[in-house]
Amino acid sequence: MVEVVRSERRGRRWLRIAHGLHADGPWTAEDRLRAWGLVLPPSAVWTSLTAAQLRGWWLPAAVPRPVFAAVARADRHPQRRGLAVLRLREPPQAELVRGFRVATAAETLLAAARDLAVLDLVPLADSALRARDCTLEELAAVGATGRPGAAVLRRALPLLDVRSESAWESVMRVLHGVAGIPVEPQRVVRDADGRFVARADLWIVGTRRLHEDDGEVHRDRAVHRSDLDRDRRLLDVGLQRYGWTASEVLRGGPLVASADAALGRAWDGGRLRAWRALVDASRWGAGGRARAAARWPDEC
Image (tube, rainbow, N blue to C red; front, side, top):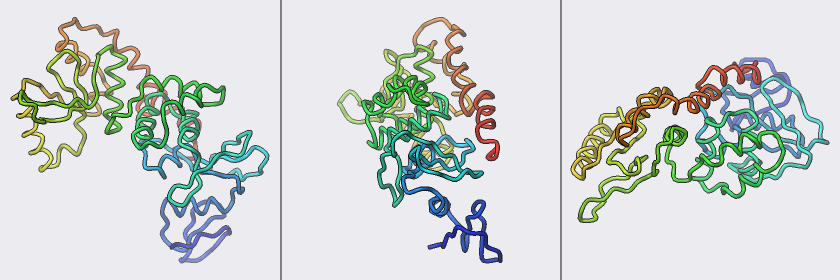
């Protein structure tokens, strides 16, 4: 295990982690947390995106971030570049995850909601629910408080779904919801004899249309062959699979127009206004990027 120390060290052996924190060799993200732990008070727990990473949740990629800790308000703590400390009225509740003291899942999401927009928070919370690290009731309880982040968490709660199997499926589901497109996540498709055919990301209710995330994994040769076979089986039972890339989902228009056609309704560009506002406030939009640069200038 790499040795981490709280002191200034010189020489080829020592690599700098942060001001006053060094490791005696190439260090990992977990070594970084062990080093920061040397300067934090005993009450400290990891929270927000740092705790989410330790738990293996779907992180909002490309969000610049320091490491996040929470401490009791009465405890002294360092103020250093790369470290964000939340001061809580009461000592934070802790759980042990991979050997680290982390905030409870609900507290972790509440802390993340201080810095993230609704569209960033939904995949993170979906993955927490999917991992059974918390329940909707627990999230509703912390969202009902007047604490920082609670308002954003409350806005995200109606958009969550434990059935989601990927971050982009979660994002795509939100688009359908705000555009008024009724969908059923993880629709199980069977043939006339009841044999399993496929499980689809999203079924547009009342149609023969399936909408799915087409991430980079689907470009793998073996996966592509499997996808083609699956598409043929879906066509055999009268269903059409439409795959959408991340950029198409963020634009919104092509997907919504496709769904409108399947539902037999006229195109209405007004259905995209709420979606565009969500995207702009998120890490994918100018508003979200500006907020990140303002909150974490040293990380951008």
